[in-house]
Image 1 (cartoon, rainbow, N blue to C red):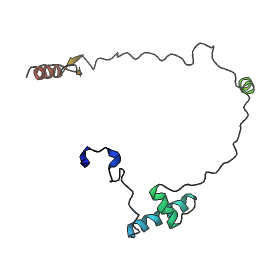
Image 2 (image 1 turned 60 degrees about the vertical axis):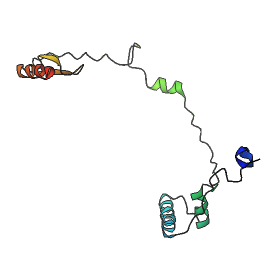
Image 3 (image 1 turned 180 degrees about the vertical axis):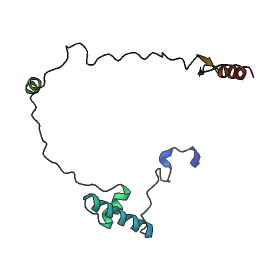
Length: 135
């Protein structure tokens, strides 16, 4: 029996790509120093070189700190009695007046290309848009 007829369970090559070992070169050590410098600035503490290597490989397990939860007591009835509503209970705001154009600057609306509407302010604009559409 030849190898190409066997299933994947008989394959002797690695199925997944293994992570390469970290090389402690100058660039890596510079990144380690910058990381510790940043952590000192924010007050989070420093890591040792071995812990930093594990951190870069994604294998570092940091313990989580459990703090006590703060509960706030809020009495809604007290709040409502101190700050009464100022409206009549219909809606939350006054209606905004509609914006209507009342001037004479824009004479009309022209179509430049397909459904591209442009304002026409004078007769020269209307002639220019008409000529652009035909050419």
